Image 1: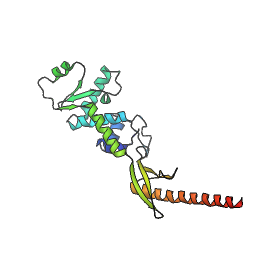
Image 2: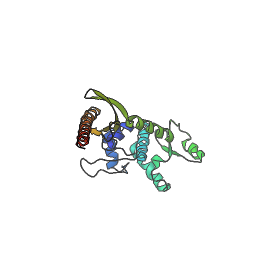
Image 3: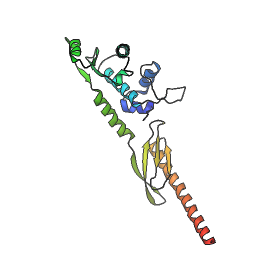
Image 4: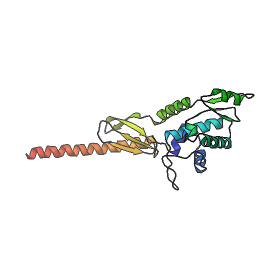
Length: 214
C-alpha cells in the first residue's frame, strides 16, 4: 500500500509543509516515488510512514530535528546493516538525548544515570496505531443510491495514491466510477448506473428483436 502527502498528513498528524521540508532536506524521503516537478505526487511506503511517525513522536517529546538528524547519522555509521533506523529500532528519550534500546539494557541504564527517563517510544504500539488509523481512513464504506426509483448498494473506496475515491455497484458487474469527494463520487456512480441500465435495456431489446426474427 502506498500513501500520498495528503494521506500521510491525515495519518501522522504532520503538516504538508513539514512533510515537504523533510523530503527536500533529505531527512525522510518517499521511497516509492519522489516528487519530479510541480504538480507531481510523492508516494510513501508503510515503512516511510513509520519513520515519519517516530520522528514526529520524538519531536513532540521535545527533541529537536537537529538532534534527531545527528542520532540517525551516528546509527547509520555504527549500525550500517540497519537501513532505516527510525523504522527498525526502539528509542528512549529524556527530552534532550536519544537512546536506543539494545539487547544489553545495562548500557541504556548507565547512559541515563543521573537523568530522568520521561518518554519511551514503543515501536510496536506505533505500528498498531498507524495500522488502525489507515484502516479507519482507508476502509471501504457502503452507501445506498436511488436511481430511477430503485435503490442500489454501492461501495466507496478511498484512493490513497491519487486522492479522491472510486466507487462501484456490486449488483451491476463492471459498473464503477470515481470522484474527488464522497459527494461527487456518489453522483458519478448514479450516472454510471443509469448508463449501465441503458446498455442492459438496449441489449435486452436487441435479443428480443433477434428472437422474433427467427
